[in-house]
Image (cartoon, rainbow, N blue to C red; front, top):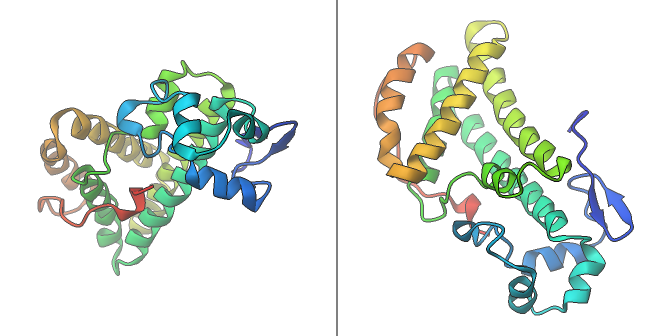
Length: 219
């Protein structure tokens, strides 16, 4: 994660993202109906009492592992990021040519948009609902977006023969715009944007692939 080392607090101990302190906590997080599975309702709407009841644990148990609901949200987002990037990278690496790899990024998003698991961007929603606080939550969201941009930049470097950070940023911004528009208007709302963007990336303008689902997004 580089300099963006977001610390998540479990009680009195701090841990870097991904370093869950024990298998017990991992199992607990898996049982909790956190906003990853309830993202259509938002983070603030899912209270600790509801989490406690659906997870079948006491409120004391929750607070023994997580100092606050925000700390739990951070762990949720870390896990979301890992699944998101693992699936996206697998989709890209499965393609033979550079052009196919770049298009795979967009097809992957289009399949997600058309799936029942799509409820917009969890990272943007978490940052917005918590008014950019705590700072660690904002950094975590930025880290996720930077990782997506980094993958795009790697593909573009292969295509162009040199890094192009500006174009990678443009593509990442277009993807974020597609996420918002797909959430507001439906998955097919991104097709016009794709038709305009594809020539800029030296890709054909065939419609994006919306079929296939997004099993990675199932909690």
